[in-house]
Length: 250
Picture (cartoon, rainbow, N blue to C red):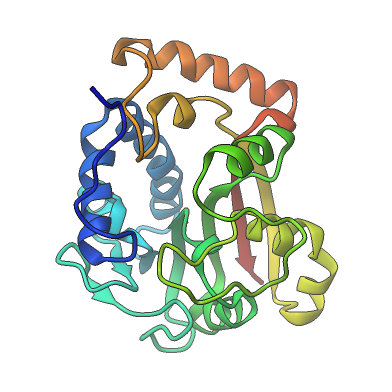
């Protein structure tokens, strides 16, 4: 029996994103990992209980179940969305949003500068963008370049081909914009300041099998691998697969 998931729909079809959502919700390792990532968003919400928050690229996840007040959105028209729109043209008034959340979304946005300018437009002073993205670490590069279907080009620039909402990608884009080109970012969009960059999660996503293959270990081992992830990412960020980047509008 194949350990690979057999998808019914092509990668850029809305139905494929809903297939991804069911995998994330029902695979124990993935669901728990997303719950941990959502907890980072919940902390920001608790700090501003009356704030207005949006999530971009919500389609594959289930943040709405954890934080019902968040406006969940996707570029694809999905029944799970509150709103459907492009991150390059967001339907919000100037200085009206307190926070923007993203998981594995930034590296699919075709024009980083245009998105960040648009995000700056809608964010209130003190508002934040919190994103969880692929890490351009030694371990991350090895995994993403050799075992992942998406392109991973650290030599790339701030734009990617607009091939499709999921097929268009560069996993190294967050590193390019927020680390390699920090000085350029400060010139292009000076009001957006990098608050923190935290590398993490060396193993759990990989062991979960991601969206493509079955989970590789029993569910009861999750906490052991959580501890191992914590130890490894504190030994060296070069062992991480993911990075959490927080940007603040000052």
